[in-house]
Length: 295
Image 1 (cartoon, helix red, strand yellow):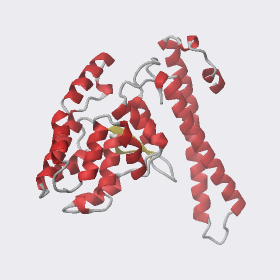
Image 2 (tube, rainbow, N blue to C red):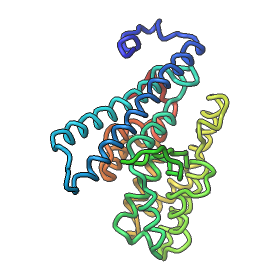
Image 3 (cartoon, rainbow, N blue to C red):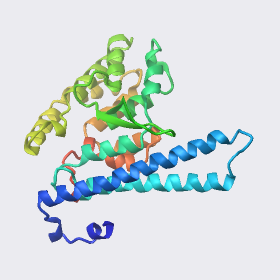
């Protein structure tokens, strides 16, 4: 199956949406089978680990072999999900924007939940003083997603279902804490830029909310035009006295404005990789990115 799609010519790409959707259903059957095997292997590994401290511990070589097989199966599973997104999208259209789908894939399979980290920050009266605060904010802004309490059964890990937090969610980590900065910080520059950044994040269009991509692109252009107040505020305070979060806020504003130069720096600072950068690229840097022009 992989070789069939990987060796297609450009003309072969012109499959009808119905054919692509049918192939997507077939791939979903494969991926569901793989997922069940991942859960089963992780269950066995969990039993082995629990038995390690008993009077009848498992054979270390068996544990090592099962650990290797579980890891390999997990790689196959996540790779097959990515293959499905790129080559047989559920909606059946190759040249549709792909950023949001890639981010779903990234958040579902790789990003560790930030729920505990966010909960701990909520307990602090001035969370911006915590050393992990700005890393948390950057990751929240870049990935535009938060975890919810819906999981797939797995003894070894929680396969968390993630949902977009760019628009209209009850709790959104980045905007929540930035709103707190805007309301409670003592420095006027920090308050002003944080407030404007919250407005920008709240207003960012989501491609999944539009039936036609042309409408999404129009909305995105209008939104980006409206960023001038935020960018002007950053510029006005650039040469003044240093304020809380100056470097971090400037970086986030640059990313929101589509500056690709800061993307890898932010990913590196947050412990993220090139894989994360590519998935984030289609959200903040090139919202029009499709399967045919992936970086």
